[in-house]
Image (cartoon, rainbow, N blue to C red; front, top):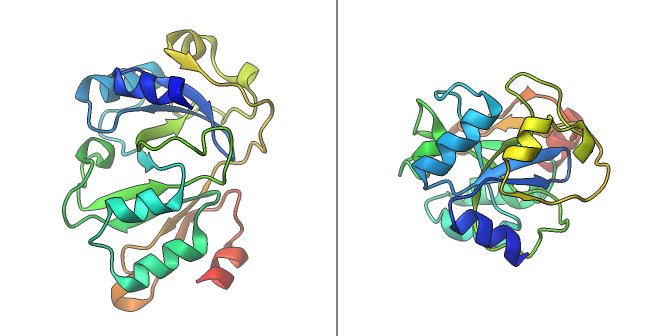
Length: 193
């Protein structure tokens, strides 16, 4: 979607549908855009966010340092309703990493209206920090809707946030951990890995 990519390229903040809940997105390399997204959410500046790609191939291409075992895990889990915590030895997208640049949150949603978007974004759910995750556009706080430069409506979404899976020790030890169970059940992750 060209309007979405143009918004991100111009340093804007977009309100968009993922495969789980509505989110906010901006350029992960723009300090001004990231600060604005965090301000809109009233999110603490030291709280990490995730970098989202809209299909797996660009995500894997952007992270050539990932080992074969991690690549296989990503291929098994993505796209889908998961946020993966990965080792980030090159400290990519530090604005998304918060106080720990050695960890990267990665998200690739199931295909939706933005499946053709080619640029990565910093993303977070479209709620005030700590608030309820918005299932529909009308569930998004008015100030967030009005503060966004672009709003993409795709109707009601499932409403359960992504499952957060820690894969930082997966390559070395085969260890993974669900830090927040969400839309993808623990059993499905275990079966995939």
